[in-house]
Length: 484
Ligand code: AMP
Image 1 (cartoon, helix red, strand yellow):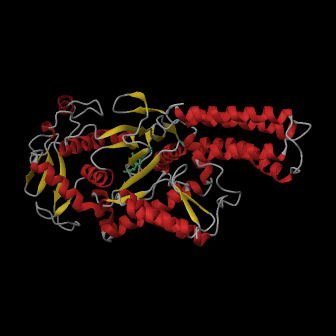
Image 2: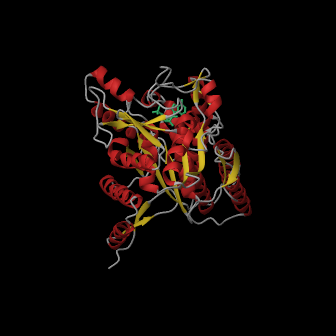
Image 3: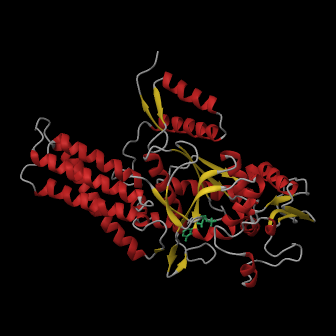
């Protein structure tokens, strides 16, 4: 089976082929860290976590990068209200965001890149745009002159004239044209600033992401994601900036956009105040139920949120969990020496078929809804074999079924925890954390294309008996025999 993905840029489903061999670079727009993350954020980040997991499962060497907007108007406003520095506020909510991601078992991101740590890259990209005549400076504010880029609107299907007629863009006396957008904002009293060739100030929003991806991925890359509200103007402007700066097209080959999580027909959002924070929801429902609820809808479709739907999801998830717990105890209690019967072979054939159906649903634009439907058929068959058959399956058969079940459910990030919430494959904590740290550092080096050091880390770890594996499910590790 070939993976097919819906691409917002071409408005169709296409076969997925990376730019270079097996390597896939994926960038997803991260949050603006001025408040707690809510269930709407979880929707988008769980969706892209599963996309990342599946790409790795299929053997792609994926590097998943996410930016963090840690300087913007909302951050400054909120920090002023609380009388604290904007950097302190942004750091506090960045840490809470990471905690939320961790609790939701979103562990696929290789690197979080903060805007404030990439100001030099932003300035040099603006300089390139100035040199090429795409940007202009008015009293320390630098704007992109959109009309100079012939392709504006190709992602969102908008054209400049209808945008102006519909007043979708802000008119500002200072700009040459209403559609021009800001790349660098001149200093305002009381705001954090950085030095630049145009005077002190701070970066505009759109250029943050293009400067970051150019640094880590180069001029062109494979996948860019985010929720659908970002298609215009944010992603459209990113294309405009990057393709003007480099002259290379397409900037990104595949654009994936997730649908909204809505409350009574309106997008859950900080500004509307109709949100439930991830931590609020976790008080009542565990992370796997939340993931299950979010994944039971295809990632592009909207999700209607009301607590009753979450309750229903908890009941459905419990049905799957019950089968799985039944399977675990059957494996533990089965005698060792019974041979495989004809019924066992038939059962294994069915399980093989469910696995194939699950994977073909995922190959169809990451259709988690269909994939979950297959899990229910799997669990129905399993229940019959465990509780309805005269002779229970042999231990070896049950173990094979358990492996297949975990192999596919781990793509969704489900059934990775035991009843107490502890990770099922958790090893010694400190060792886990130290090796995790080395893997993170190695990911950063890999993003900087420092392959000499990444190889050295891998080889040194191997020589002390820790083998890193860079394939399915990201970089994992295991203890192996020491290489003397
Ligand atoms: P923000 O911090 O508001 O910039 O949002 C960070 C990411 O979460 C962006 O990709 C948003 O589009 C996405 N997002 C925010 N609210 C929702 C929602 N209600 N449903 C789905 N995605 C959302």
